[in-house]
Length: 359
Ligand SMILES: C[S@@+](CC[C@H](N)C(=O)[O-])C[C@H]1O[C@@H](n2cnc3c(N)ncnc32)[C@H](O)[C@@H]1O
Image (cartoon, rainbow, N blue to C red; front, side, top):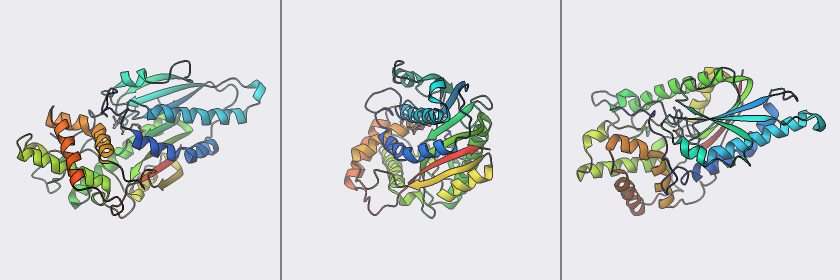
Protein backbone atom coordinates (compact mmCIF):
# COMPACT_ATOMS: atom_id res chain seq x y z
CA UNK A 1 0.00 0.00 0.00
CA UNK A 2 1.44 3.38 -0.87
CA UNK A 3 0.83 6.09 1.67
CA UNK A 4 -1.58 8.82 0.59
CA UNK A 5 -2.26 11.77 2.92
CA UNK A 6 -5.97 11.94 2.07
CA UNK A 7 -7.04 10.03 5.12
CA UNK A 8 -4.56 11.13 7.71
CA UNK A 9 -5.64 14.17 9.71
CA UNK A 10 -4.09 15.09 13.08
CA UNK A 11 -5.13 13.25 16.26
CA UNK A 12 -8.77 14.01 16.95
CA UNK A 13 -10.69 14.82 20.16
CA UNK A 14 -9.30 16.68 23.13
CA UNK A 15 -7.52 14.01 25.19
CA UNK A 16 -3.85 14.22 26.20
CA UNK A 17 -2.66 12.93 22.80
CA UNK A 18 -4.90 15.17 20.67
CA UNK A 19 -3.68 17.85 18.26
CA UNK A 20 -5.52 20.44 20.36
CA UNK A 21 -3.18 19.72 23.27
CA UNK A 22 -0.07 19.08 21.20
CA UNK A 23 0.12 21.95 18.71
CA UNK A 24 1.93 24.58 20.75
CA UNK A 25 5.11 24.12 18.65
CA UNK A 26 3.16 25.28 15.58
CA UNK A 27 1.37 28.00 17.57
CA UNK A 28 4.60 29.60 18.70
CA UNK A 29 5.89 29.75 15.11
CA UNK A 30 2.63 31.24 13.84
CA UNK A 31 2.63 33.88 16.62
CA UNK A 32 6.26 34.71 15.83
CA UNK A 33 5.33 35.63 12.24
CA UNK A 34 2.13 37.44 13.19
CA UNK A 35 3.35 41.04 13.40
CA UNK A 36 5.13 40.98 10.02
CA UNK A 37 2.25 39.32 8.20
CA UNK A 38 -0.21 41.73 9.89
CA UNK A 39 1.76 44.74 8.66
CA UNK A 40 1.98 43.24 5.18
CA UNK A 41 -1.79 42.67 5.06
CA UNK A 42 -2.43 46.27 6.18
CA UNK A 43 -0.18 47.58 3.46
CA UNK A 44 -0.91 45.23 0.57
CA UNK A 45 -4.60 44.40 0.76
CA UNK A 46 -5.83 45.94 -2.48
CA UNK A 47 -9.55 45.81 -1.81
CA UNK A 48 -11.77 48.84 -1.56
CA UNK A 49 -13.25 48.30 1.88
CA UNK A 50 -15.85 51.04 1.31
CA UNK A 51 -18.78 51.46 3.67
CA UNK A 52 -21.02 49.36 1.40
CA UNK A 53 -18.59 46.41 1.35
CA UNK A 54 -20.79 43.49 2.33
CA UNK A 55 -19.20 40.27 3.57
CA UNK A 56 -15.47 39.76 4.03
CA UNK A 57 -14.58 36.11 3.44
CA UNK A 58 -11.58 34.34 4.98
CA UNK A 59 -10.52 30.70 4.50
CA UNK A 60 -8.10 28.56 6.50
CA UNK A 61 -6.87 25.61 4.43
CA UNK A 62 -5.91 22.61 6.62
CA UNK A 63 -7.31 24.10 9.84
CA UNK A 64 -7.24 20.82 11.86
CA UNK A 65 -9.19 20.88 15.14
CA UNK A 66 -7.92 24.13 16.62
CA UNK A 67 -6.96 26.09 18.58
CA UNK A 68 -4.34 27.63 16.24
CA UNK A 69 -6.87 28.31 13.50
CA UNK A 70 -9.04 30.46 15.81
CA UNK A 71 -6.05 32.56 16.77
CA UNK A 72 -5.05 33.12 13.12
CA UNK A 73 -8.57 33.96 12.03
CA UNK A 74 -9.04 36.50 14.84
CA UNK A 75 -5.74 38.15 14.01
CA UNK A 76 -6.76 38.52 10.32
CA UNK A 77 -10.15 39.95 11.35
CA UNK A 78 -8.55 42.49 13.69
CA UNK A 79 -6.19 43.59 10.90
CA UNK A 80 -8.95 43.93 8.31
CA UNK A 81 -11.12 45.85 10.78
CA UNK A 82 -8.36 48.33 11.43
CA UNK A 83 -7.89 48.83 7.63
CA UNK A 84 -11.65 49.29 7.26
CA UNK A 85 -11.68 51.82 10.09
CA UNK A 86 -8.84 53.79 8.48
CA UNK A 87 -10.50 53.87 5.06
CA UNK A 88 -13.89 55.00 6.21
CA UNK A 89 -15.23 57.98 8.03
CA UNK A 90 -15.77 56.85 11.60
CA UNK A 91 -19.41 58.11 11.65
CA UNK A 92 -20.54 56.45 8.44
CA UNK A 93 -18.99 53.14 9.40
CA UNK A 94 -21.24 50.12 8.84
CA UNK A 95 -19.52 47.20 10.59
CA UNK A 96 -18.02 44.63 8.25
CA UNK A 97 -19.43 41.12 8.45
CA UNK A 98 -17.02 38.19 8.32
CA UNK A 99 -17.53 34.66 7.07
CA UNK A 100 -14.82 32.09 7.80
CA UNK A 101 -14.38 28.86 5.86
CA UNK A 102 -12.58 26.13 7.81
CA UNK A 103 -11.14 23.57 5.40
CA UNK A 104 -9.55 20.20 6.08
CA UNK A 105 -9.81 16.56 5.00
CA UNK A 106 -13.26 14.98 5.21
CA UNK A 107 -11.88 12.78 8.01
CA UNK A 108 -10.79 15.78 10.11
CA UNK A 109 -12.54 16.03 13.49
CA UNK A 110 -14.81 18.96 12.53
CA UNK A 111 -17.05 18.26 15.56
CA UNK A 112 -14.23 19.10 17.95
CA UNK A 113 -13.31 22.12 15.81
CA UNK A 114 -16.79 23.62 16.05
CA UNK A 115 -17.32 22.58 19.68
CA UNK A 116 -14.17 24.40 20.76
CA UNK A 117 -14.52 27.57 18.70
CA UNK A 118 -15.02 30.79 20.68
CA UNK A 119 -18.59 31.17 22.01
CA UNK A 120 -20.99 32.98 19.67
CA UNK A 121 -21.14 35.97 22.04
CA UNK A 122 -17.43 36.57 21.41
CA UNK A 123 -17.12 35.31 17.86
CA UNK A 124 -17.07 38.02 15.20
CA UNK A 125 -17.69 35.70 12.27
CA UNK A 126 -20.02 33.13 10.74
CA UNK A 127 -18.34 29.70 10.51
CA UNK A 128 -18.51 27.25 7.65
CA UNK A 129 -16.88 23.81 7.46
CA UNK A 130 -15.35 22.91 4.08
CA UNK A 131 -14.35 19.23 3.83
CA UNK A 132 -12.03 18.16 1.01
CA UNK A 133 -8.45 18.16 -0.18
CA UNK A 134 -6.92 21.57 -0.71
CA UNK A 135 -5.01 20.10 -3.66
CA UNK A 136 -8.23 20.67 -5.61
CA UNK A 137 -10.91 23.36 -5.62
CA UNK A 138 -12.93 23.43 -2.39
CA UNK A 139 -14.56 26.88 -2.72
CA UNK A 140 -16.31 28.88 -5.47
CA UNK A 141 -14.36 30.97 -7.95
CA UNK A 142 -13.45 34.52 -6.80
CA UNK A 143 -15.02 34.07 -3.38
CA UNK A 144 -12.21 34.54 -0.83
CA UNK A 145 -10.59 37.83 0.21
CA UNK A 146 -7.87 36.41 2.48
CA UNK A 147 -6.74 32.79 2.54
CA UNK A 148 -4.40 31.30 5.11
CA UNK A 149 -2.60 28.01 5.58
CA UNK A 150 -0.10 26.97 8.24
CA UNK A 151 1.95 23.82 8.74
CA UNK A 152 0.10 22.02 5.96
CA UNK A 153 1.79 21.87 2.57
CA UNK A 154 4.61 19.61 3.76
CA UNK A 155 1.83 16.96 3.63
CA UNK A 156 1.83 15.75 0.04
CA UNK A 157 -1.28 14.40 -1.65
CA UNK A 158 0.46 10.99 -1.59
CA UNK A 159 3.88 9.43 -1.21
CA UNK A 160 5.42 9.00 -4.66
CA UNK A 161 4.55 5.47 -5.78
CA UNK A 162 8.09 4.42 -6.68
CA UNK A 163 9.42 5.02 -3.17
CA UNK A 164 7.17 2.22 -1.89
CA UNK A 165 8.05 -0.14 -4.76
CA UNK A 166 10.78 -2.63 -3.87
CA UNK A 167 11.64 -3.10 -7.55
CA UNK A 168 12.20 0.60 -8.22
CA UNK A 169 15.56 2.41 -8.05
CA UNK A 170 13.63 5.05 -6.07
CA UNK A 171 12.64 2.55 -3.34
CA UNK A 172 13.06 4.21 0.03
CA UNK A 173 14.88 1.27 1.57
CA UNK A 174 15.58 1.52 5.30
CA UNK A 175 13.80 4.85 5.77
CA UNK A 176 10.24 5.98 6.36
CA UNK A 177 10.67 9.56 5.16
CA UNK A 178 12.47 11.58 2.52
CA UNK A 179 15.55 12.45 4.54
CA UNK A 180 17.57 13.38 1.42
CA UNK A 181 20.10 10.54 1.85
CA UNK A 182 18.97 8.66 -1.27
CA UNK A 183 19.14 10.74 -4.43
CA UNK A 184 16.46 8.88 -6.41
CA UNK A 185 14.08 9.06 -3.48
CA UNK A 186 14.60 12.80 -3.14
CA UNK A 187 13.99 13.23 -6.88
CA UNK A 188 10.71 11.31 -6.68
CA UNK A 189 9.52 13.37 -3.70
CA UNK A 190 10.52 16.59 -5.44
CA UNK A 191 8.39 15.71 -8.47
CA UNK A 192 5.39 15.04 -6.22
CA UNK A 193 5.97 18.26 -4.27
CA UNK A 194 6.06 20.35 -7.47
CA UNK A 195 2.88 18.71 -8.76
CA UNK A 196 1.07 19.26 -5.44
CA UNK A 197 2.25 22.83 -4.86
CA UNK A 198 1.15 23.69 -8.38
CA UNK A 199 -2.29 22.19 -7.75
CA UNK A 200 -2.55 24.08 -4.43
CA UNK A 201 -1.63 27.43 -6.00
CA UNK A 202 -3.84 26.89 -9.06
CA UNK A 203 -6.85 26.13 -6.85
CA UNK A 204 -6.25 29.11 -4.53
CA UNK A 205 -5.63 31.27 -7.60
CA UNK A 206 -9.18 30.53 -8.71
CA UNK A 207 -10.80 30.82 -5.31
CA UNK A 208 -9.28 34.14 -4.26
CA UNK A 209 -10.58 37.42 -5.65
CA UNK A 210 -8.07 39.45 -7.73
CA UNK A 211 -6.03 41.49 -5.22
CA UNK A 212 -6.86 38.99 -2.44
CA UNK A 213 -4.06 37.80 -0.18
CA UNK A 214 -2.84 34.35 0.82
CA UNK A 215 -0.66 33.87 3.89
CA UNK A 216 1.41 30.70 4.13
CA UNK A 217 3.42 29.63 7.17
CA UNK A 218 5.43 26.46 7.52
CA UNK A 219 8.92 25.03 7.78
CA UNK A 220 11.51 24.41 5.10
CA UNK A 221 15.18 23.49 4.88
CA UNK A 222 17.70 26.27 4.45
CA UNK A 223 19.38 25.93 1.02
CA UNK A 224 22.08 23.27 1.07
CA UNK A 225 20.77 21.49 4.17
CA UNK A 226 19.40 17.91 4.08
CA UNK A 227 16.63 16.71 6.35
CA UNK A 228 18.71 13.93 7.94
CA UNK A 229 21.04 16.64 9.31
CA UNK A 230 18.26 18.36 11.27
CA UNK A 231 16.95 17.31 14.66
CA UNK A 232 13.46 16.82 13.21
CA UNK A 233 14.87 14.52 10.52
CA UNK A 234 16.78 12.64 13.21
CA UNK A 235 13.58 12.10 15.23
CA UNK A 236 11.77 10.75 12.15
CA UNK A 237 14.67 8.41 11.32
CA UNK A 238 14.62 7.26 14.96
CA UNK A 239 10.90 6.47 14.64
CA UNK A 240 11.87 4.32 11.61
CA UNK A 241 14.49 2.53 13.75
CA UNK A 242 11.87 1.88 16.45
CA UNK A 243 9.57 0.32 13.85
CA UNK A 244 12.43 -1.95 12.71
CA UNK A 245 13.04 -3.00 16.35
CA UNK A 246 9.34 -3.75 16.66
CA UNK A 247 9.47 -5.87 13.49
CA UNK A 248 12.35 -7.86 15.02
CA UNK A 249 10.21 -8.45 18.11
CA UNK A 250 7.30 -9.59 15.92
CA UNK A 251 5.03 -6.64 16.80
CA UNK A 252 4.94 -5.57 13.17
CA UNK A 253 6.57 -6.87 10.00
CA UNK A 254 9.49 -5.76 7.86
CA UNK A 255 7.26 -6.15 4.78
CA UNK A 256 4.97 -3.43 6.14
CA UNK A 257 7.90 -1.11 6.81
CA UNK A 258 9.37 -1.74 3.35
CA UNK A 259 6.30 -0.24 1.68
CA UNK A 260 5.81 2.61 4.14
CA UNK A 261 7.08 6.06 3.31
CA UNK A 262 5.51 9.21 4.69
CA UNK A 263 3.76 11.56 2.25
CA UNK A 264 5.72 14.43 3.77
CA UNK A 265 8.34 16.62 2.10
CA UNK A 266 10.30 19.60 3.34
CA UNK A 267 11.60 21.64 0.37
CA UNK A 268 14.61 23.91 0.53
CA UNK A 269 13.77 27.62 0.62
CA UNK A 270 14.74 28.42 -2.98
CA UNK A 271 12.84 25.36 -4.21
CA UNK A 272 9.66 26.65 -2.59
CA UNK A 273 10.18 30.20 -3.86
CA UNK A 274 10.96 28.96 -7.38
CA UNK A 275 7.76 26.93 -7.43
CA UNK A 276 5.59 29.89 -6.41
CA UNK A 277 7.24 32.05 -9.08
CA UNK A 278 6.94 29.35 -11.72
CA UNK A 279 3.24 28.82 -10.98
CA UNK A 280 2.60 32.50 -11.57
CA UNK A 281 -0.90 32.85 -10.07
CA UNK A 282 0.36 35.20 -7.35
CA UNK A 283 2.93 37.91 -6.77
CA UNK A 284 5.16 37.44 -3.74
CA UNK A 285 4.61 40.37 -1.36
CA UNK A 286 6.59 38.93 1.52
CA UNK A 287 8.71 35.78 1.78
CA UNK A 288 11.13 35.48 4.67
CA UNK A 289 12.48 32.89 7.04
CA UNK A 290 13.28 33.02 10.70
CA UNK A 291 14.44 30.46 13.23
CA UNK A 292 11.71 28.80 15.23
CA UNK A 293 11.16 30.75 18.48
CA UNK A 294 11.82 27.56 20.53
CA UNK A 295 14.96 26.72 18.59
CA UNK A 296 17.38 28.00 21.21
CA UNK A 297 15.80 25.83 23.89
CA UNK A 298 16.50 22.18 24.57
CA UNK A 299 13.05 20.69 24.01
CA UNK A 300 12.18 17.89 26.40
CA UNK A 301 11.84 14.33 25.10
CA UNK A 302 8.28 14.30 26.40
CA UNK A 303 7.40 17.39 24.36
CA UNK A 304 9.02 16.00 21.20
CA UNK A 305 7.36 12.60 21.57
CA UNK A 306 3.88 14.09 22.13
CA UNK A 307 4.22 16.55 19.23
CA UNK A 308 5.27 13.84 16.75
CA UNK A 309 2.64 11.46 18.10
CA UNK A 310 -0.21 13.94 17.46
CA UNK A 311 1.08 14.45 13.92
CA UNK A 312 1.65 10.77 13.03
CA UNK A 313 -0.85 8.62 14.93
CA UNK A 314 -3.50 8.46 12.21
CA UNK A 315 -1.16 7.41 9.43
CA UNK A 316 0.75 4.91 11.61
CA UNK A 317 -2.49 3.27 12.79
CA UNK A 318 -3.85 3.09 9.27
CA UNK A 319 -0.73 1.36 7.92
CA UNK A 320 0.43 -0.75 10.86
CA UNK A 321 -2.90 -1.39 12.58
CA UNK A 322 -4.28 -0.60 16.04
CA UNK A 323 -2.16 -1.16 19.11
CA UNK A 324 1.17 -0.12 17.60
CA UNK A 325 1.17 3.56 18.46
CA UNK A 326 1.58 3.33 22.28
CA UNK A 327 4.48 0.90 21.91
CA UNK A 328 6.12 2.93 19.12
CA UNK A 329 6.15 6.24 20.99
CA UNK A 330 7.15 4.54 24.21
CA UNK A 331 10.17 3.16 22.37
CA UNK A 332 10.86 6.57 20.81
CA UNK A 333 10.88 8.21 24.27
CA UNK A 334 13.32 5.55 25.55
CA UNK A 335 15.64 5.90 22.52
CA UNK A 336 15.71 9.69 22.85
CA UNK A 337 16.47 9.30 26.55
CA UNK A 338 19.38 6.97 25.74
CA UNK A 339 20.66 9.11 22.84
CA UNK A 340 19.66 12.70 23.63
CA UNK A 341 19.44 15.13 20.72
CA UNK A 342 22.38 17.52 20.55
CA UNK A 343 20.39 20.63 19.61
CA UNK A 344 23.54 22.76 19.30
CA UNK A 345 25.17 20.42 16.77
CA UNK A 346 22.10 19.55 14.73
CA UNK A 347 21.07 21.71 11.76
CA UNK A 348 17.62 23.22 11.83
CA UNK A 349 14.55 23.61 9.71
CA UNK A 350 13.52 27.28 9.48
CA UNK A 351 10.08 28.86 9.69
CA UNK A 352 8.96 30.59 6.49
CA UNK A 353 6.19 33.14 6.29
CA UNK A 354 4.81 34.23 2.97
CA UNK A 355 2.20 36.72 1.83
CA UNK A 356 1.03 36.28 -1.77
CA UNK A 357 -1.27 38.53 -3.75
CA UNK A 358 -3.63 37.09 -6.35
CA UNK A 359 -2.79 38.63 -9.75
C1 LIG B 1 -0.04 20.09 11.34
S1 LIG B 1 -1.73 20.36 11.00
C2 LIG B 1 -1.81 22.14 10.98
C3 LIG B 1 -3.11 22.64 11.50
C4 LIG B 1 -3.24 24.15 11.61
N1 LIG B 1 -3.19 24.77 10.32
C5 LIG B 1 -2.15 24.72 12.50
O1 LIG B 1 -1.36 25.55 12.03
O2 LIG B 1 -2.11 24.35 13.67
C6 LIG B 1 -1.86 19.95 9.28
C7 LIG B 1 -3.32 19.93 8.80
O3 LIG B 1 -3.35 19.94 7.37
C8 LIG B 1 -4.37 19.06 6.97
N2 LIG B 1 -4.13 18.64 5.59
C9 LIG B 1 -3.06 17.97 5.11
N3 LIG B 1 -3.22 17.73 3.79
C10 LIG B 1 -4.43 18.28 3.45
C11 LIG B 1 -5.16 18.36 2.23
N4 LIG B 1 -4.68 17.82 1.12
N5 LIG B 1 -6.35 18.99 2.24
C12 LIG B 1 -6.85 19.55 3.38
N6 LIG B 1 -6.19 19.49 4.57
C13 LIG B 1 -5.00 18.87 4.60
C14 LIG B 1 -4.28 17.91 7.96
O4 LIG B 1 -5.44 17.11 7.97
C15 LIG B 1 -4.04 18.67 9.25
O5 LIG B 1 -5.23 19.00 9.88
